[in-house]
Image (tube, rainbow, N blue to C red):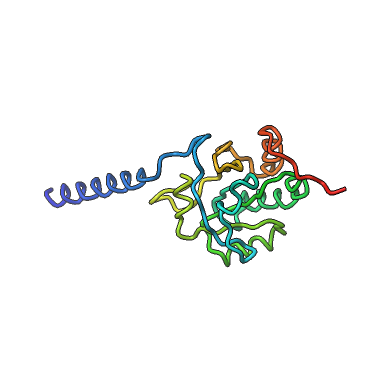
Length: 184
């Protein structure tokens, strides 16, 4: 009986510790907050930084859980298919996951991505954006639209993978993100 009590107590303690650790994330981002900086390797082999866009253009950062899964494949293909519409806006757009760079490079090729898929294998940026935590392994499917000034303009936590790119296009329009100037 004493062994059972010690075992049960240990399991309970471990559970409480895991719960506490899972809550140790940065405060959840809200519209109007300064977006956390990131510096992540893209499927194009380049390092992409939020700071490179500040003062120049808006940024769409769409997190997805895991490369080569059905929902993520549908979402990333939708962005590739909507590339022409998205590129009308003065905005950089990235999809991102906690998969490693090599996996995301292969994934980008498989979905014919004409945009960089960013890799955050240690989850540092993902935790700053609140899409994962110290216990959860994969990112939530959340999208952040960040203004030229680096502040969060919009957060979508109810992403529909198949229509996500069209939904982002509509949201950029609604938010008044400027369109690129065409040359005569």
